[in-house]
Length: 144
Image 1: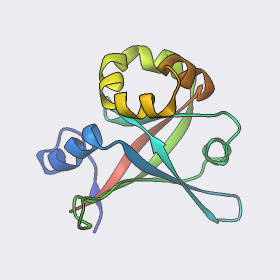
Image 2: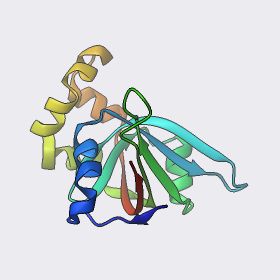
Image 3: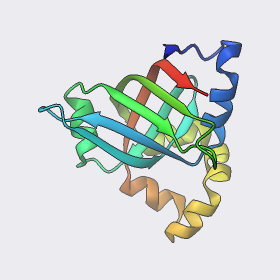
Image 4: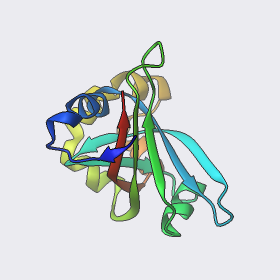
């Protein structure tokens, strides 16, 4: 059963540890007809929120603008363990991805060094392409 998510609560320490370490999260929204839309995203845990950089013209951005509820869940451990599923709200930030990145660039570069190298473009070019920042605030967590 899901419980209220509070970033400073010791019961959430394992979930927060995974939020800081995992590379991919699934960002799930619903469209106007209630159909789910789930996509894998790079993300960064910052000040109790999940920050996702996106292209502006995506379904997830449109759904968030329309007030969709959001689920964020992390890749699991090798055996279906280390599960973290967060339910909450998201907003399209007035700040660009580049402005957000300025708050945590060294840690983001460290976390995504291999992914950026694999992408084949420097981080600044990636952030220019994925210029819209989505900011997700978790309300509940289901974790084991």
